[in-house]
Amino acid sequence: MPAFIYLLLPIFFWSGQLHLGRLTVSDGMTLFSISFLTLEVLPASIILPFCLLKSMWREREIIAKETGLYWFFLAWLGIL
Image (cartoon, rainbow, N blue to C red):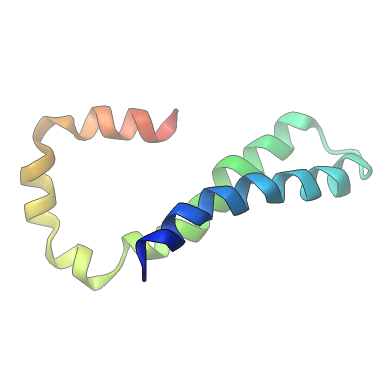
């Protein structure tokens, strides 16, 4: 997949929040629920299958060696 597609994904996620917010606020959902679902759950569920590709799984030792002890900081940045 070309790299520009990965750069477009956050734009689609952010713009989709506006339309989803209009639909869900009228149904009575809280703003916290909307933000959590649209900014955390939806993008994670879309990106997760790409992280589970066979090529990534075969190179997991290399990835672990390159990240070293920085995996904690990378995970924290991913959460933020």
